[in-house]
Length: 65
Image (tube, rainbow, N blue to C red; front, side, top):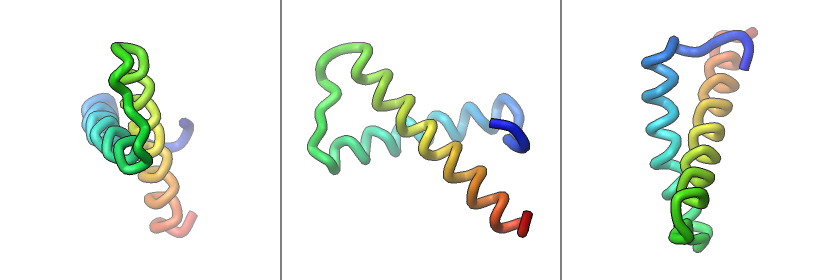
């Protein structure tokens, strides 16, 4: 995504938090990622994308731009 971020370390931390959030969201929806490596990676990726996009949208709107 253009226009933002916290650098490599900051974005990695947000991505890791997002992977945990993704697991929580999928469990809340009763969707299991117990099918192996690729479903688990998909859940983590989906959560990381959700958190990174949400963070950048919230931060942009908080700054009024």
